[in-house]
Length: 151
Length: 143
Image 1 (cartoon, rainbow over the protein chains, first blue to last red):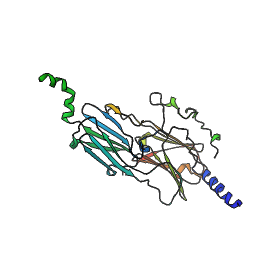
Image 2: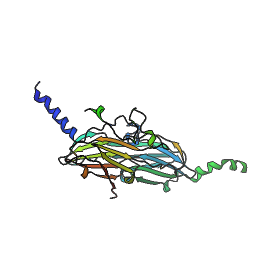
Image 3: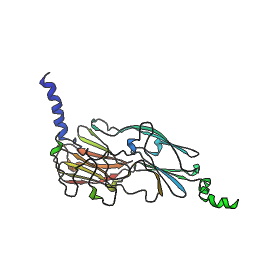
Image 4: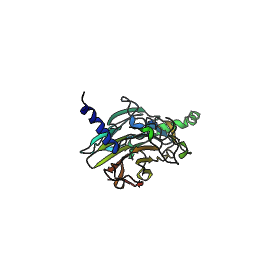
């Protein structure tokens, strides 16, 4: 073992330390947000909300545009698929890499039938929101008690 | 790398004294937890480039402060669920982002620029020059 081979990494570390290196808040909780994915198999985490007329699906996909996303709805099943590739700046070397490329497909069951033609998807600041209007059938489930009395 | 010698030096911030509690008193009405945005750092001959995943905030809600050789990024996330009805299932939490990054003498703080687009913050840090106290304006890329 020679001293030359030892000095090379030391020099590199000194160079890095003078630049941007110590991201020293690793004690902050790296809570699993969407883009960390639930798992490689299940895809991104999804938050689902509803009001009387719509179901809302939200997922965080930084760096993904609507063109990168494919939404498929069949009856009450929604599939969202997409991917992103990290845009590595040209002519650079990597000092730190925490972000990841990803490719996903996730299928979830919706709480009600949907008016598929009226579904809207928006992407804003890396957050995908899909607004899914409930079908007439689904809404009448709310008033099934009054229908019973008609019989 | 001697992380234990670092003094945060900000009276307005709570101590980072545990793995779970983070500056809870800064936003007493919100979820007290801040999220650590994942960061890439790239190096070229004339600059460093930092990319951070911070979906759901905005250029106006991102604050970048350079002070004492530290780059501090805070991204405030507004409650976007207030008008979206009631939750059926919540698989992830929504909250602010926070990140401390030590920058050394090799960065020219005066030349730092930042752009926010598609939920990703990009900070360009030119090399060389003295680190001084500064606040960076974040621009939004609408192209």
